[in-house]
Image 1 (cartoon, rainbow, N blue to C red):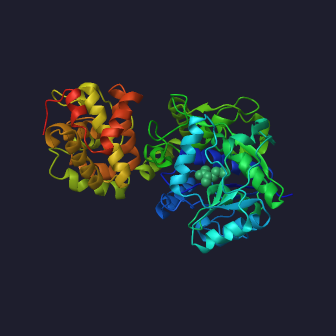
Image 2: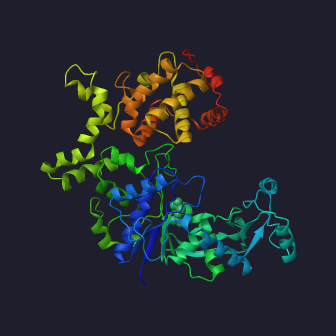
Image 3: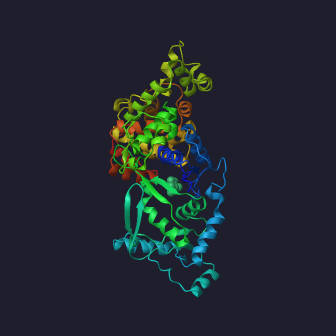
Length: 508
Ligand code: GLU
């Protein structure tokens, strides 16, 4: 048997370190067993998937030097490797399950589904769908179809018993079928859900081991049932421990730096990032912490993969990075690497228009642009809070700007400018006297500097986001309760009451 493994990222956001982490273990596994490593793009979520996110995933993994043998960019014998190009395959398979009596057409309307969910919640049940269309007679089905009623295709999940399987990392797993809804496989628009597309593709692409994060464990019983329903042999499942943030929860962009580009732009070495990521899920036999991918490929043993989540500790990453700089970059090469990073013609030329009229001597240059080259920007509540504006309000304004930027999907200078006006208006605070000083302090760690919005474009989305998060953290964070209140006000774009509550003198 040739080992074939894959990563199957959805192009719905910035390239996440979690994707690199899972990709790495798949790559190591494939190389160790002399198998193949495949990249498949799972872009079935039409509303959230974007081609530019796919490009970013590819660029980010390449930057990490994580390279695949088959994928949408290079093709391969089992393509296409982009799910949006395989819709007919999924449709055919969904109808095959209906034919076999393993799945059925469900005509529930959105109103019916809401009602079912409410009833189930009141009864304290985990599953929310009451299976009312599971046993329609063929005539009833035909009649509804003739009336033009739309339907989805659902999987017939057993009503009793347990799904039991052996995870190659976690051991024997058992979960009761009663907790699992009759999963939708094909939506009414003819597009597949993740579960159907994922299983059909893993089968057709001859995947032997599914190595993915713990967060997918709740989906695995559905996948196992799908394999059984089709009459296929399931691959071996291996669920990797999750990367955790400081709060012990799954590493999320809402609280932590997560974009691979953040690490690239902040001057980390790709070889350090991947060494560090393997450390998060694996321990080398001799407890060695600095090694190359070749070393782990050679000695790889799945038993050495951790069971529980690993804290993504930036201090540790910094330590690994320093070791790698010392070990892998000879002194006479260091300058070349810095040039490659940011001290290059292309980047410096972009700074010249911003510098031209703002330096008295050349030696002012570094002071003017220090914030573009340092990660550890010094921020203090004093610096971040404009006159008469309390830290609580400042952190809420920053959080609202993050939401605004994510909604408009534009983190360039132009996007920040828009977001800053939206926030000023929503909170009823003065744009120039309140929001702009906050932005200067957050982005540059000072109140004056080169033009802010052009600077943000140069700093880049990922470092900008992390500065926003750092500012909120410096101000003491936002409690869950406050966050809920803020979110509600934000949805209505009306946060004037909240601003008044938190004492702002800088009203519009
Ligand atoms: N599309 C899923 C993701 O975004 C794939 C999960 C899996 O590996 O099955 O990670």
